[in-house]
Image 1: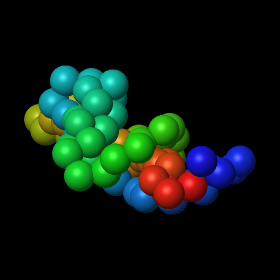
Image 2 (image 1 turned 180 degrees about the vertical axis):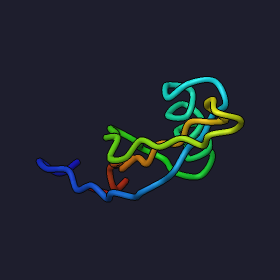
Image 3 (image 1 turned 135 degrees about the vertical axis):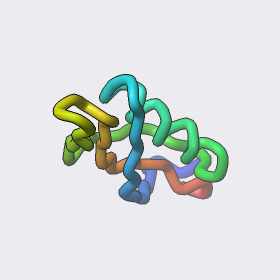
Length: 71
């Protein structure tokens, strides 16, 4: 094992009809299917879709950091 870690950062967009928190959780759950060693995330944008004057769904853009396996 090395004495340092190297990370890669990707950008993903999650959505939910329920909440911003669910939108984050949905994005992380989908990424977890193929991205290993996820370590942190940051929300960079928050948006929503309006339907009939109310929130139709929430949308968040995340940057997700994950450790390179060999570092």
